[in-house]
Length: 234
Image 1 (cartoon, one colour):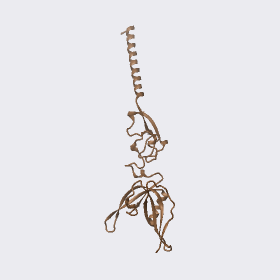
Image 2 (cartoon, one colour):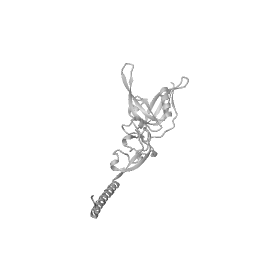
Image 3 (cartoon, helix red, strand yellow):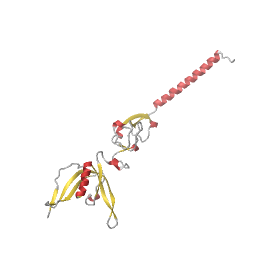
Image 4 (cartoon, helix red, strand yellow):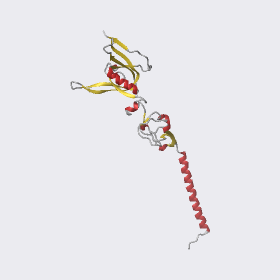
């Protein structure tokens, strides 16, 4: 039977103690390195957010995480995302990336993201005359005038009213219109930002008479009270 002498017992105990000390040292060193790693602020979803949802502060949270875990496209503050819309579903705790949110006016986004809240986009066909010679561009503001033919019993031949004022242009373009001779013509269009009620009124106005746009200066956003103007029969 192998017997341990006191010296051997002491030697084994010393080896065990050294091994334990080395393990503790390694553990402490690893913890120290981890605690000293640089952290950064990243924006995450505080709750699950469905796609096409306007983000609010309550939906978001800022977390400190190790820098090597932060996505390069992650937003860093709530102000970077509040008021924007989620392009896709955001899971709780997920980092909010620039590619997953959209704001009004950003190139490449779906057109619907360019429409302000509580507004509607409505498109009008225009001509070189009614569309201010094609000069208005996206972001410009216009007034909308309606001219209607008066009834037979009226002494006036035509009446013109300003039905909308200070409306933002969301887009300009054109649609292909087939002609009677079999050819096709591109009809210029202007898309305006209006309220739901204004969209109804404008649609009704198109059926009632001739609609024309007037272009506003960039600094003039004031609405004025105007009386309809009539032209008498000759």
